[in-house]
Amino acid sequence: MIKEERFHDLCGEVSTCIACERMCDSSKVLGPSSGKVTSDLMFIGEAPGRLGADNTTIPFHGDKSGHNFEELLEFASLSRSQIFVTNAVLCNPRNSQGNNATPNKQEIENCSEYLKRQIDLINPKIVVTLGATALKALSLIEPHKLTLKKSVRTQKNWYGRILIPIYHPGQRAMLHRSFANQRSDYKFVFDAMRSLGMKRVKVYGEVSFKIADLLEYIFWKHQNISYFGLHKLVYLVEYEIYKKYGVLYTGAYFIRQKDGPYCTNLHIQKIKNTFKNLKTSTNKGKLYVENRDANNLFSETPKLAKSPEKIDREASLIIDKLLESSDKDLKKKAYLSKPMRTILRKEQRENINSYNAPILFDIQEADSQLNNGIS
Image (tube, rainbow, N blue to C red; front, side):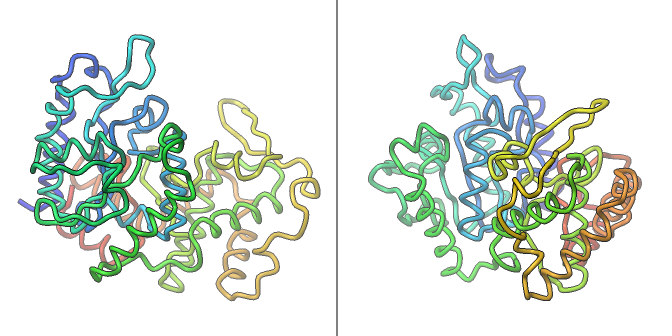
């Protein structure tokens, strides 16, 4: 049985698990949005967050810990599309007040077999633990005496691979490990990856800066854009650039959701944090991002509008061409792109949905998945 089919079966088992009483009603966060099952780099956190993965079903996405994690990845030029992300415990544990709680010893033990099967299946060269709970959970798979305080940002041999313990990206952990120090930790992971000859995603420019540059240009040109349309527009820029130049322009992580491509880098709170003067509004159930005064929002002409780089000019031309398109037209164009058509044909042929599956811009890889019938 091929790796992707085995992963699909494992996710099915997890979805019916009721081993932990206080987590039976929580989302089981393991699925396509976890990342590449052929990845050489695996991150393991503690548990899905109440305001994050328990809602989005995307590991480390949607809450402050998720925002920090994605920002740290971007800083270190690590692309979420090339890694696998999971947790020591796959459901959200809560206390009697309904807030996030640390999983107890029994809950970690209950999930340890699932964690072992993920590691065996993905077979990464490097495992990165995020926090003390994840590091301790690994000792149930193969014993070790490592502690986070003494072993942070070091490489250790464990279970036939390299283990790198670092701190959790949550706000509480920042009291013990500053954001600046955590940035260095992720750079260390990147350097370890490069030293093993592991391939990195081919991205033009710095990931975080390119997303910000795109948004800055879009908000400068458009006073009122729907959040739905924004995701489709950024996806189409990424797709058209990849199709023409063979590189990922932003390196953003796109997944297939019910209404088409969703960009994890465009979580609404992250946008608000980046552009302080932007406003949001809702009209007929649809969320809009508003820029009522471009002069007030931008002190100077956006970088994309004055960049001498050919590929940047191409990105701005794509945006200019698409900005006046309706949401319906943007959705249609996104669905007609080859990566989305590959997913849709697979869904139709196998009578399944692929919600939260990564959208692959590598056309050869996408075609391979289609031809091999990967679930």
